[in-house]
Length: 196
Image 1 (cartoon, rainbow, N blue to C red):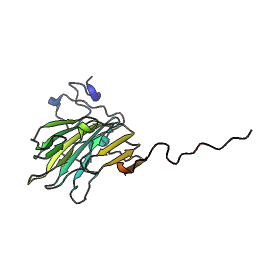
Image 2 (cartoon, rainbow, N blue to C red):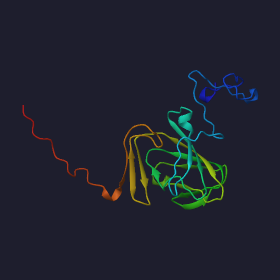
Image 3 (cartoon, rainbow, N blue to C red):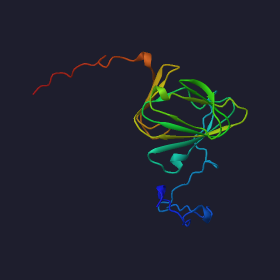
Image 4 (cartoon, rainbow, N blue to C red):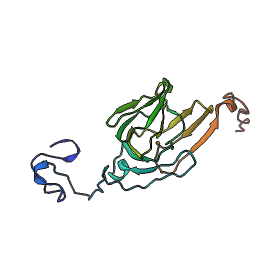
């Protein structure tokens, strides 16, 4: 049996796959199948300068420990501000278009098929913008570790969350300016005396 419940030679689990693919998919709990070429966009954003369509493919495929999102980015738009993750590693795959990538080394154009990894920490800071004339599509795969703290070097902010990036679970997620940080002991008082 191959990874993901697939085994060669039996396509009985997937009527949509021709027998020559040799892929079999376990349908015991009837998982929802996701498709990167025909995405079900389910998490779009429309904000000036940060507009995209997003399909949360990892969630759609019922992944538990990996996230995968397909982004369709219109010309002139970016996905997110320049940021770094402190807990989660990400990998970007360019499916179509020539988006531009910003890292600590500066901006550069990416080619179709290019794969780039963003390590944990400030060395892995990144931002993606479509400076081309056509829509760009990228697939971003990531670990889904919580809690997570994101750093935003341009604005001096951090975002702390008790849920993994992109997860819509309930939980804490707030952004702060790092200049407003306080000492651990500020405003903390010892407990009152206890009577027996």
